[in-house]
Picture 1 (tube, rainbow, N blue to C red):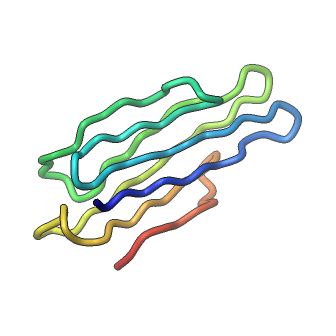
Picture 2 (picture 1 turned 90 degrees about the vertical axis):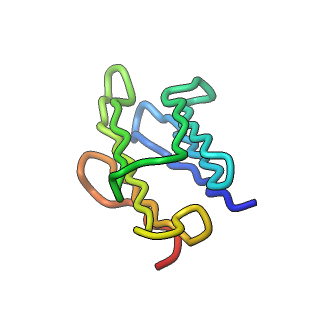
Length: 98
């Protein structure tokens, strides 16, 4: 089973934790903010090579979170994918394979 799991810490004064999980075999994708479900998606077939998930985090200290999931053109379910996480348009994490 191929899956990707990572976390981001967001905020200086108002701290939040963003947890990302994607099971490449089943297509289930979840993004939680402080344990609360923010994104629940199912990705089995897609014509796009890159899928973006964007959402705000915080109340008084607002941040824009964007997570990109980039797949290969052929046999994507069996090949490594690339994941990029941005906080306020700044790349903070890049994971995966080429």
